[in-house]
Image 1: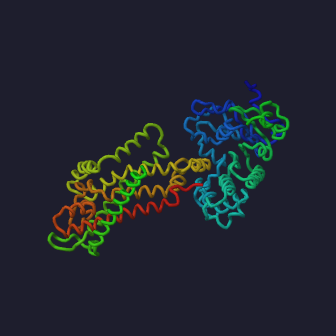
Image 2: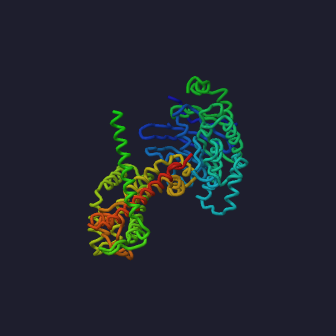
Image 3: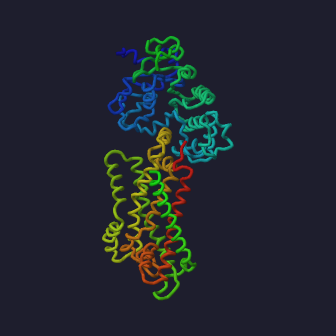
Length: 268
Length: 268
């Protein structure tokens, strides 16, 4: 049994210079009869990249999906505990998950562009939220496609189907599409796991750029990737948060033996 | 074993080729321009056509579509997108049972519920009977094609802050539109040749049927009436009508296949 004080790990002072963005307290998730996440507490600072690592089934994706309430759509999922974003509890009964997801965007493991044109993909979010003005939609499309480092590759074929793009381009399109809603937080669920090394490098570079404007939480299987892109890393194992701290410290000098076993490749 | 199975295969093929060839030969030698433009000639007089039956069939199918497509389509959307648990499986079971009900029984029910209250046979009653027969096919095919849309597309839209119904209307249905259209076309083709439910709902008519509340001629009932009549000239007309009906139904099937050629559902 782990010491509760340790599972409730807060990042040390150096990393928390940034203001607190997301505070998670005693988060428990059940899928039917199985406990997928066990009393996780975590403070995620603004304008930092926080990586969630751990072996398959450790609860890191479940945790991520709690932050924009995507678990609401999974039959049999039950979430207890508290999550606040800028102090607002997102599981309060009066919170509309649809509104929440405007503030918390998400990029999925497998790129999932809509079978529509490149432009219509990026414009989808703003249109859903009531933007009808063609000029402003074009501005949003250009801005977000530039942010996603995709503009130069697609600016001449915005009306072509998004499905014609390569896998890496599709994933960057999905990032642009998420940014078009102007979220405050961007959740990324293994965004590069299906991509080749060059496309992965582009996505990682992008994550680095984006943290100036957004708070980023990224789930990754790849420890090198966590080390490269993140400021803070949380290690999950069997539904528990084992250790949370500045990435550099966690990878060079983990305080928990379980973390050390994982990052030195003794299992996982 | 090989011999028996190959024999059965050739028998199937042979029956089809013989049937199509025979109808094409008999029909083509009987078909003339006046078949499409003229009303049936009085008994004993040669010539004439089935213009009223062609228009009658078109009006019946239009009515059937107005009844069957909304119910089948919306029901299919419900089952695929909202339908969970035992109620949905009961609806599915009910649709399968409805699909198996002999068409003459649907005819007699519509006779009791539509023809008797109106007081006479009508296009409306015939169309309702055909529409009821369309529902199970339209419903189940719509459901099946919507289920082929990957959940990743639904999640993408939900994560952008789209409410559930917007996700369904703007993402899920458009992604499956080709498959759904095909299913609806096939459900229409399926009832185009139905005769039994029309016998005592739409009845028949040797003249034009104005509006929707008069008895009407239709190609299948005309074939039935003309084929059992003792006049050689009527037999020729029945063959011509058979060919026209066959071309319409086969044409719809070919069109459906063509639509499905590049995939029923669009996604990455």
